[in-house]
Structure formats: structure tokens, C-alpha cells
Length: 93
Image 1 (spheres, rainbow, N blue to C red):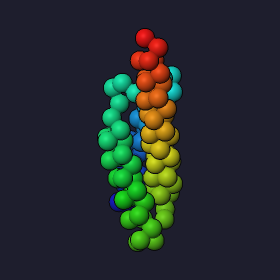
Image 2 (image 1 turned 180 degrees about the vertical axis):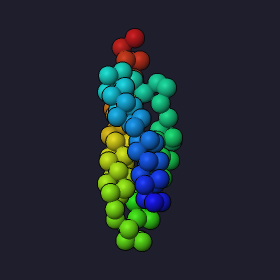
Image 3 (image 1 turned 60 degrees about the vertical axis):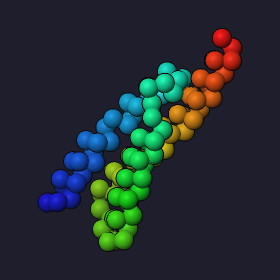
């Protein structure tokens, strides 16, 4: 039963990442984003994944952790891209 509650928590928390990735892609700016926030979230997912690996409790929840960390990683990469685009825009103005 605890696996179900953990899955619901991770799924609910992870639902925002596809939207964040889409917004980062379309906006082409890093304004309003926090790299530190995303890194802390990423570290949280790494901790969850590590906990699952240490306890060898690899259930379907593990897959959700992987999906979420991939989405956060993509958003971090887009943040870095958007920082460069912001700098280029500032130079051209």
C-alpha cells in the first residue's frame, strides 16, 4: 500500500515537469527560473532513486522516478541554453 501512496506523490509532483520543459523550450528565456531550485529537485530524485537501489525495491515507482529525473535534467539543459540566448539578446539590444 505504501508503494501506491509513494507513486501518487511522485506522479503528482512530476506532472509539472512536462509543462515546465515546454515553457522553457517555447519562451527561450531563463527569466523567472531558478537553477538552484531545479538542482535541489534533481538531487531529491537522485536520493529517491538511490534509496530504491539500496533497498533493491525496484517497483513501478522506480520508473516514475526515472521519468521525472529525465524531465528535470532536460529542463536544466534548457535553462543553460536559455541563459545563453538571454546573453545574446542583451548583446544585440
